[in-house]
Length: 492
Image (cartoon, rainbow, N blue to C red; front, side):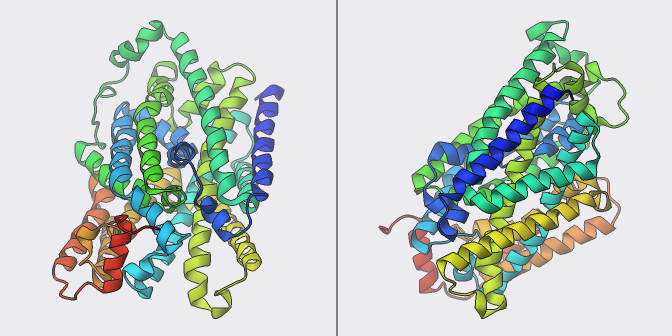
């Protein structure tokens, strides 16, 4: 990186901190800090939902997969996310917005106390918080790898730098800072992504036609929709995981729907995010697909995107692309920190000791900022030790995706009246069963990535449904009222 590149990156960091300071003035209480007061417009919520769904890992772990396996990455990642988010927009997103309207929730697990019971809520809150520590740590480690490739600074320094910036602006600005950073980083990402797309095309022999012709020149299998171990079974497993993730099982994505001003706004936000996932990754991923034509026989494919950018981008634009990657990661990590903090403050701490209950508005906001700060600090520690958890891909894909299902199924299906007979026993059984399958698949040697990823969530889904079918208890009046409100039959 040249001096101009560092200037561009520094300007981006200053912009982030400025957004945080601006957002500080809009945050008056914990509802503003966690849900933006329920005032997010559909276009801001939709863009934030979209960019919060992927991080710098796309440019590291996923770039490596694009280099070794080709187009299948788009099929099992972006395409399945698009379909999953579209389904979520129609069936799940409006229910999150209505929950905030009639139950005044600020965290995605808050409603579980009514839907199931205190024990179920606490188990989901604790396990989910622990999982997010590893997931967020992996994302911080991913962007540090990119900074190392671009500038040569150590990965440790990169993690500390990214962690510090995230720590500052999300702690002072809350969700308002997060969503406006999402919007600004989306603009930066589009400019940087289009620039990279055009420059790579200009460096191919066929020009624009290379979008179609390059596939014959790539290694065998790179043009296939499914390329082992990323088989059709794996894609279906990812579709199932992504539905539960992008509809709100990944808590920071639920917050985008919860913070929408109405059910219809949340629905439109989901549709916008789905369309963006269908189209934008085709442009964003193109340089990664083309990388084997420019960089042959890389010993570490995860460095392919960074090396391509260094080789072909002129001074100044390299800093812009790196700023885009930083933006991706900071968007997601800050979003995670904000949402997990809401779960800790609203659902965990008040049940540990009574001194955290019914706090005055000022103390509640102070607690929100303290927990956000502490969670981010812990994720930095995990990022510094990413290699002990299977590296970046292991943290983000294997651990997070495989563990997501067991805790997300009771959260998401609990919103739907078709599953109202599935009570706390079904929820607890699905969580425990899914975790047991996850552990078993880690212990037993097996070669199927589809089984490793999809086994835990499929086991959880089956247990949740079966235990619900055998539930003989009557649905309570309180629960019936919950579902009436979720359908929007009551005025608010």
